[in-house]
Length: 313
Image (cartoon, rainbow, N blue to C red; front, top):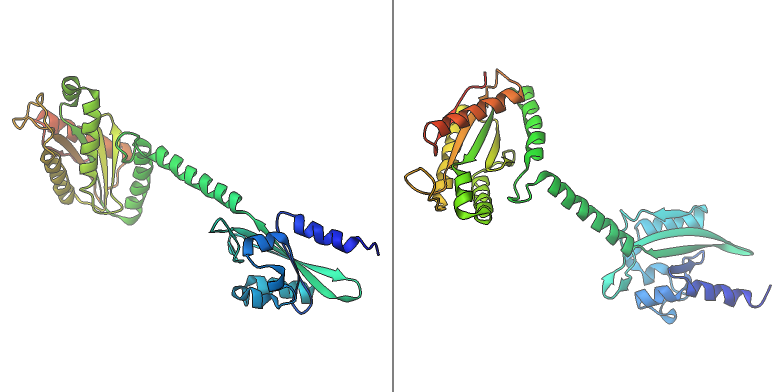
């Protein structure tokens, strides 16, 4: 045997940018490379010749233990799932525990019982990148379904939710109510106070009205411009009317000045149209929306700052 071979192999193990541990057939540590020393804080004098699980007691009885048994006694290699074993070894970089990928491989040794090699790779950067990608995907999804100005659901979110709740109402035989809400004389508000104030008004009204909703299944969306829509599953006409009146009152309670509003209060107010699909008489979505729109127009035509309801039948 080349006398340089063993020192060379040991130098290679110490130079590689991953953890390398070699165990003999009795699970004693015979190699613990520089990467492991650097990230575990344990030097050769603390680990070489010792039982692996005396050095790493937290790994006893776990997946690493099972993988070592498979390698030493069954000649079977193992790759531990990073999802299930994010950081099995107590290894740190700048006080942060390293996310790890662990591979355990049997090693045949001429004239000696089988050994095994444990390789530990730092996958923290890859895990961080995946986390960032997931967060970015969530942001994109939020942007896709949220109105950029008010932060509530947008028209696309409304369309998806309406389809879902409409199917659920038909399947379950439950009522479904829809409210169409419009800020009174909003064009005049914009013309008088300016578009920046107009945006602030939309934001305040949207937040206040969305805050009236109490159930997770209810949804308020910006339908377009100064118009909002509210989906109320399992809500009959009487309940929808009470909700609409609460919303109308809440908007007026904001006490946002509106000198161009013909209402005597000279405050920002809303008009609301209601349509309810009866439990035993489902209609098409367009029919329900059309009835709520007509009810909204009726509320505006009869003086604004009021609620009107029409049957979608």
